[in-house]
Image (cartoon, rainbow, N blue to C red):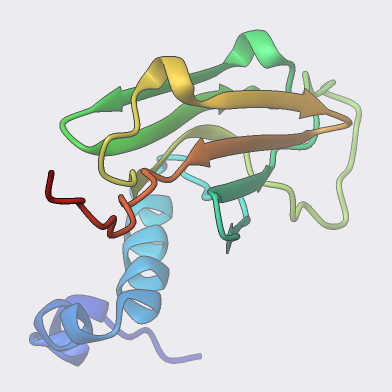
Length: 145
């Protein structure tokens, strides 16, 4: 077995991956895990309709009290922490794939959208946020009197 020091494998890895956020996230998660930290990123779908922006996040095993949602400086921030299950000393795990720990996801909010106008619904481990889009004013004719 050969050991490879990831830091010398490609010293420009993080710089090069800045252009590809998916690779950067993967390397960042590997780097964090190698330090013993836990980080996970819940899966999210973002859909746009004529009047709304809809965000659905998979947060299995969490309760609504473990999730924080805030709007700050034009960003919608979803954060929380999923605790790991208590492990007994006599248990022998053959595979552990579920991630635990804290997470943060952020998204740009439509112009004019406020925290009060966002509708949040949490059911069966799925958080659904509906953000209304600002309606652009349609052109109107002005009559001369």
